[in-house]
Structures are given as C-alpha cells and as structure tokens.
Image 1 (cartoon, one colour):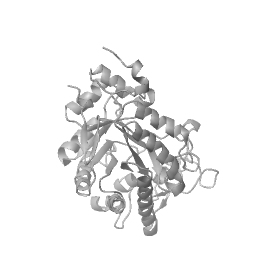
Image 2 (cartoon, one colour):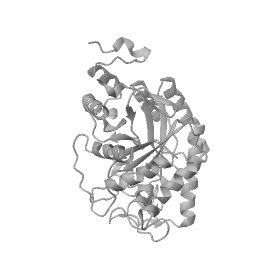
Image 3 (cartoon, helix red, strand yellow):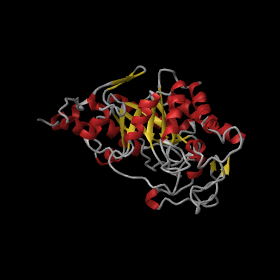
Image 4 (cartoon, helix red, strand yellow):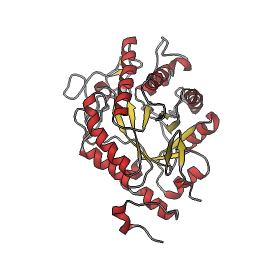
Amino acid sequence: MANLFSPITIKNIELKNRIVVSPMCEYSSTDGFANNWHLVHLGGRAVGGASLIITEAAAVSPEGRITYADLGIWKDEHIEKLKEINDFVHQQGVYIGTQLAHAGRKASHEKPWLGGAQIPFDQPNGWKTFAASAVPFTDSEEAPVALDKAGIEKVIADFKAAAIRADKAGFDLIELHAAHGYLINQFLSPWSNHRTDEYGGSFENRIRLLLEIIEAIHEVWPQEKLLFVRISATEWTEGAWTADDSVALAKVLKTKGVDLVDCSTGGNVSTAKIPLKLGYQVEFAEKVKREADILTGAVGLIVKSDQANEIISSGQADLVFLARELLRDPYFPLRAAHELEVEVKWPEQYERAKFHK
C-alpha cells in the first residue's frame, strides 16, 4: 500500500500526502526580499505535487542571515512578495510555511558558489556575528560576540515580530530552525554553549531560549496554524548534543504546542564525521517519534519513491522532507505516485502529459 500518498490531518490542516518540500537556501535575495526566482522555485514544487512547502531559512534580522543574499522576514516590506508567492502556492491546493532562522556564529558568509567563506565584519557584505558563547565555528573564523541579556531579548523579539509578518503573508506554518549549528542550536548544545547564566550549563537552561521563542510566537501566531521545530537530532560527536537529548527536548516541545519535530542532524561541530548513506537520519525521526510520542519528519538522502513510502508505511516518521531530490526533480511526487501505482490529480495544464500504466 502506498502510504506515502495517504492524507494526514494536523490540527485543522489536511495534507494530501506525506511529501514536504524541505527548506533549501537559494542565496538569491537582495536585502532579504523574495523575488521571481522564489516564485518560480517554490511555485514549481507546488505544481509538482508536494502537499506542503517550507521556504528556505528566512532571517529574523539582518545579522541573522547566513549570507548577504539570504531571504529575510525582518521588515514589513518583505511581506508583499511573500504573500504573492503564498497565494500562488495555495491556488495549487498546497500548504506553505516558512522557516524562521538566525544564523548566530555561522552568519556573515559568502554565497556557497563563491566559496562560502566567512566575510570579516569590517569588509563589504560582512558584519559582526553573535552566539551563545564567544566560540567560533572553526579556528579560522572570527569569534562571535556572546549575547548578553539584552541581546537575547532582542532575538526573542525578532522571532516574535517575524511570526506576525509570517501570518500577514499568509503562511500556514512556521518552522523554527533549531538545527545545523545556527543560533538556537548553538544554545542547545554543550559543545557551543559555555554560558554560566540561566541560558547555559544544565539541559533545562540550554533549551530555555528555544522555549522562550516558542512562548513569544504563541502570543501572536494563530492557534489553528502549525508550528514545527527542526532540530539536529545528534551532533555525531562525543560530548555534544545526543539523540537522547533530542527525545527529552521533544517531550518538552510537545507540552509547548509544537506539532511536529523535523529531525535532521549535525552542523554544529565542524570536525564531526557523519556516516552518509541513503536515509542516514531516518532512525532519529523514528526514535523521537516512538520515545517522545510526537509527530516527526524524516530528512536526509531520501531519493526514491519506494524508500520514502517505506518510511511512512513502517511508521518511522509521519512526513518525509525532500530537499536535493526536489532540486533534481520538482515533479518527484507525481513520478512517485506513478511508480507506486497511485492515482493523483495533476495540474489541468499538465494532464495531457500524465503517466499511464
């Protein structure tokens, strides 16, 4: 049975299948603005048959960008183009969310295809970075400034203001980016959080920033809309964040009104050795789902229709998040339905090209 194409209802939102377009940075914005590249990129995936699209990381402040070309949601002027994109996606019968993010110490970098190196703060397109502690990601990078209490309060306020804009833009979902070594992840992990105040030390202290951001967002984000959190479920390094930590966090997140935990891994320890293989992160989505009793999303080298279907059919996760495979093939969901012998609706404009048995 092709459970990959079974619907799932989360709150009052029914997704028509279990395929999600995972956030994928495009590094194609000027001053944070979405443009026609984003309209075509995201719109094409909506036409391609996914049930839910999540935009690339949208920076909640200029200093929270990974690069100077990141998408942003830190000012009201960003809303208009995002709403245009969302309206088109909704017209295809697809839901759309945005991933709210702050890069922390991994900010102020060059675009990947131009080398991706950190840009010094006193150089064009560079700025001073902020983090949980004054510890650089690599020895060759500048040390970030450890956030003080006022800086933390600004971060929380920035996420809250971004949530208001996300609602005005018509997004159905917010995903908080607490993974891949970005700011929230930097607070979660003992590898990067060396603080001695109420935001450091114990597990309870290290998860405090994330919980305060969630609390602030709940004050302004409509109750009927969804809230996901992406985590790095393990950092693949002794003495860093572990899968058991992720389970403990997910149990707390469930009590805080989080609807799903999106389980990625890595990104916060520059020397980590990650054993790449097909579906290498799925086991963590399964562990969190089983032990924390919360909906999870699986991500990471999911490239085949039968592979994605097995993840759902076996109960390892509730959704599959596809990234690079949907860059290679925006119409993967339509092709997967054919391969799994499931009848799905194609866009009327494309009906004449529909696969036949």
